[in-house]
Length: 186
Length: 311
Ligand code: HEM
Image (tube, rainbow over all chains, first blue to last red):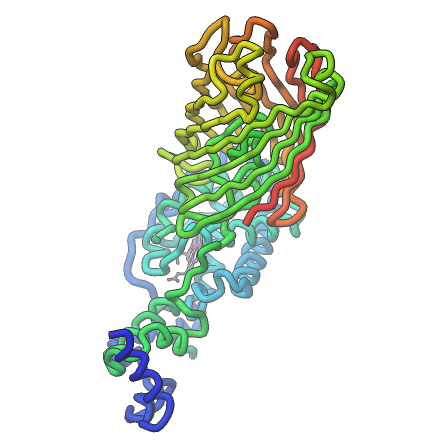
């Protein structure tokens, strides 16, 4: 079998036409979304967000019990600080060779909004969370433990750049870490 | 107005690869995904280096990952649950009357199993003369260790359920005749450990507790069992550490030890340490360690320095 395969490989590379040539179009020209019936989503003209499957909005979707006082909110720099941290986290993760592929073709407008809401809500900085629960939000992304750790490192860096004290960083991470079991898929 | 394909890219790639395979029948199954996706999806690295820095622990003097003196529930190396990891260490402890050195390697498999080996060399310097062994006599031992993670996770999962491992350490003194002469029952022995370790993120505090079933004298350097007792007893190892940054930890450890030999009593050991991961893959640990009385020479406290490389 392996000899047969090797032979086929060798001949495929030399005289006989390659299977690609035999196809009606080159691989790049094929619209695989159409081939598989994946529908294209159209962004909302006002918000710039893509539609998502219907879900029940609930504060429980946030996945953690929010803090009581405002100590963490202040340590994170209030809503402005949280916004800056989320922007930076998304920017770092989209450019991170370890995990950038997961973010490609995803709705970064929505992610920025909901992630901000989530951290703001958990930190008791005066927001409500309107996004999906963590399981639904990460379904089908195939996220691994290593991906999760990469994201945590990016979040630590984003917080460090915003001069969030390390102990406060950890207090936020303590709320996010238990969510990992809903996020890791493989 | 912008349009986006719905599927995440990786699944996209897999589906493309699958479709392509059906066209290409049996041809070059391995090269197809690589040709279509920018990043090959089938080839995951064996060493992924994906752990969070320091969550593999440093290397204990016995080769198992953990603190300096204590074994923790960590799994060695930087590999996550889909990869393997490796680490190597060199440790030196300068005591008033002795020099103690340890080096070894450890492998972590799927963040589940750890296999370790360490060699310890214990230089008796001038004491060797006093003990009639000759100046600079060295006690040596090999330590073969294995650990398996039973439950929990140091960082993730429930914020209060620790990572728990069951471990075994088989120690072989290379000075059988001499350790028997000092009264040890055997030149080799096996310790069993159960460890629980958790990073309490809300407080930036790491706690470890280990119970060790052992009859080792001076960590095994002076053999196993003796006139005061031959069977194993349960000993305790506790560690408390505080994280100052993702790369910097300070802490302390305590370790109780059995007292089997007639000729020399043993004290409990303790240390205070600082561990600094100066790169993702290299950690230096410095400690002030107190191992008490060793072979009738009391007050053995001094500096421990350890370098660990982990991938
Ligand atoms: C504790 C860690 C994490 C938190 C708190 C978190 C939070 C969120 C939130 C709030 C959303 C949006 C929910 C919504 O659209 O309704 C989301 C979506 C997403 N997350 Fe995460 N996430 C975490 C870990 C990760 C990791 C490790 C990755 C990948 C490396 C990741 C990649 C994504 C992507 C690509 C989306 C967009 C999915 C889509 O639009 O369909 N997340 N996450």
